[in-house]
Length: 395
Image 1 (cartoon, rainbow, N blue to C red):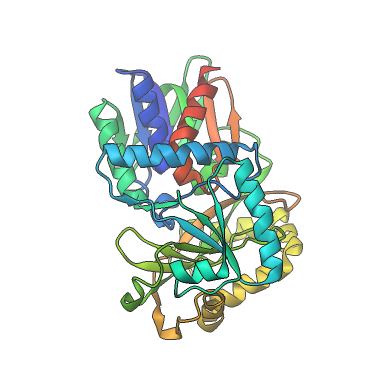
Image 2 (cartoon, rainbow, N blue to C red):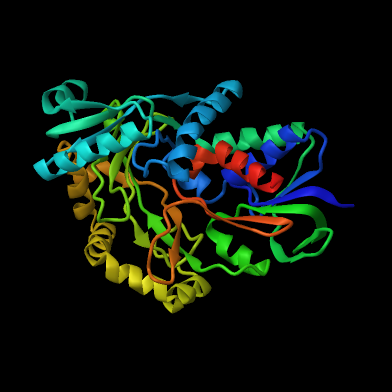
C-alpha cells in the first residue's frame, strides 16, 4: 500500500496540514505520524493560548501575512466546532517615556500590517484596567484566547471523519526518498507515501537531517516559565497585558495572560533549556545539552544578547525578580500570588553565526517538504500555514 501523503508531527501545524490535504483532495490517503501518545503534546499544548492579531511583525513578512489570516481562520474553526474562545483584546502598555516612543513606532507597524489598533493615554488605561499602571497603551481589540489543545483534538476528529489516519506512539527512525515514493521507517514498521510533509517542531532540524537535507541552523530550546496568579486575581485584568517590546532584545517579555478557563498567568521568561522536551524544572537531556554546547551559533547568540541572557536567568532563579518584572505594570501583585504553572519550550532556530531565525523556513525536495521553522505565532497561523504548504506542494 502507498499513501498519497504522510504528515510527520501531531502538533497544530501538522494537524492543520493533514486536514487541509483531505479537504482539498477528498478520498485521498493521508496518514499522520505522532511519536507521543496524544496530539499537541509539545509546543502546541504548552503555549499561552493567545490568538494573536499580528501587530509586531515586519510589514510584508510571511509571518505578518499568515498571522492576520490565521486569527480569522482560527476563530472561524472554533465557531464551527463549538470550541470556546474569547476575543478579549490586548493592551501593550508603556511605563516609561522611552517605551512610549517605541510604542508609537509599533503603532505605525501595526497599521502597516492592517491590524486595528487604538492608542490610549494613561487616564483611559486606568479607567479600563484599574489594576494596570502605565503612561499610555495600544489597545488591540481583535486579540483572543483559546485552548489550542482543544483545537488539536477537534482537528484530529475532523481528520478521522474525512478518512485520514492518525498513528500515535509512532516515532520515525529513517526517511529515504526514491524516484516514486518516500520510504518512512518507524519503530513499529515502515510505510510508503507519494509525498511527505514534516512538521516536527522541536525535532524539525533532526528530522530534516534524517531525510538527508542540509540545514544551516539548529533548534535551540528556550524554556518559557510561567506562574499562575492566585485565584483571588482571576479578575485582575480584563485584557491581555503586554509590555512594549524592546527591538534590541529577542523575546517579548513577561506579560499577564487571561486563560480560557478563567485563570490568569504571568510569563513567560526565556531561558536556554537543556532538554528539548523536558518541561520539569532542571530537566536535562544529555544528547540535547551536548548538541547545544557544541553548536557555535548558541555561543554567538549569548554573546549578542548578554544583558538579556543575564536578565532572563535572574528571573528564572529568583521568584522575587520575576515578580518585579510583573509589578512594572501590575503593582498589586505579591510574592504569594505567584503559584506553580507548567512551563513551555520554544523551538528557536539559530544560525551558525548566532542569528535568531524569526520567520518561517521551508526545505523542499521533489517529494518532501520540511517545515524547518514555524515560530510564534504558529498556533494562530496554523491553518494558513497549511494552505501555504499545499501551495508549495502543488508547485
